[in-house]
Image 1 (cartoon, rainbow, N blue to C red):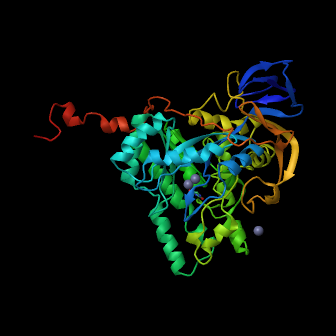
Image 2: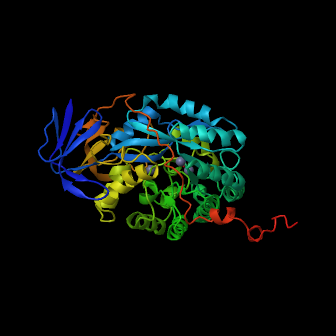
Image 3: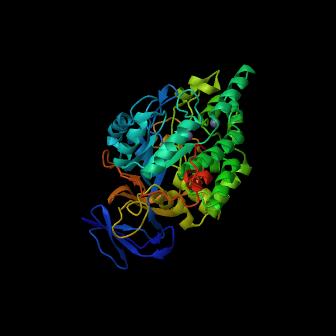
Length: 483
Ligand code: DUC
Ligand code: ZN
Ligand code: ZN
Ligand code: ZN
């Protein structure tokens, strides 16, 4: 059985050109003119691009006393219907829990996936067991370790733990990820706001100003530099964090930043909506910011100082959000977006001229595959690559509505937005999952994508070398002890 996508314009992160794509089994078999196949998908007037990769999701995650409401079934259906063909979810050991045990839990849950997936591993505590298990985790094809600098008292790791873990990452050729917010300051501000009677969702935004993110981003970059590790900063939401990343990049450090589609398109005014439910449904960390920060994020995507667009998809129902009535710190943090990331970015990015179609492909797919080390199996339209493809129709449009979404929650933070650039076809390893706009899911079709360490980390410009080099006294033949 072969399939040919005919008559479209192929768009990659590098270039656009007219060609047909022939798929045999789960791979791309040929790219060229006048190809023939058993099944023909008409891509006339449309763009053929690598399926989206969402590098940041939380499906069925235990968090803040509940579980996020999209699992690998509804979550990956949502992904596919929006043109995303791979998700990278976070295996989350509770503090004290074995990393390998957590991985088994995530392995089980992901059996329902409709599209391919991979995992990051969260480091939520530190000790000899974690040090040992990190190696075993990389051997299972996971080369990314996430650190929460916020959520004091639960998931947060301190600087000494982060430094030790980053050094371990460097040794293993793995990449540390950070959720960069100063958890101590957030805890202080939250307690003070509550004591002053500020209990509503808008206080969530006051408790996490841009400075807490800027400070933590700077700190993580410096710690990574001292550890000789690269760094991937998730959900960069503000100029303060972006500035730190820009500066690090200019100094030759391997630091990547990931803004979310929510921060690019929604702003802090959402928290001042008089409807408590409306505001609480948009509570996530970091919170939405003002236009100045949004402009900075868009500029970062265009200039390349920010690399990937994700969702941090972590969906809670209104009923779950209402756990926080009377105390904003109990509103489960998280919003959805998996289904909407690609059309929202196309509409607000490409249609406005902020991004070119190739930049769109880069930040939704190719850059992510390269950084996370699954390129060119994923993120590419190349012979031999997995046939994870989207045929994007720039004229096809809809109005986003919870009533018609795949996600299991009862609202959508983008409700009412008119978007264009919807998928005409989506293929996951050769199987047509969206057929002429209609989702044809297949539970269990998704496979784990191994992403082993890419090899020794380049520490070219890192201060780690200087820190570990012989000291002046040792070079002079005097023992370091001075004796
Ligand atoms: N932020 C959220 O809003 N939800 C999940 C975890 C996170 O860091
Ligand atoms: Zn986070
Ligand atoms: Zn509303
Ligand atoms: Zn997250």
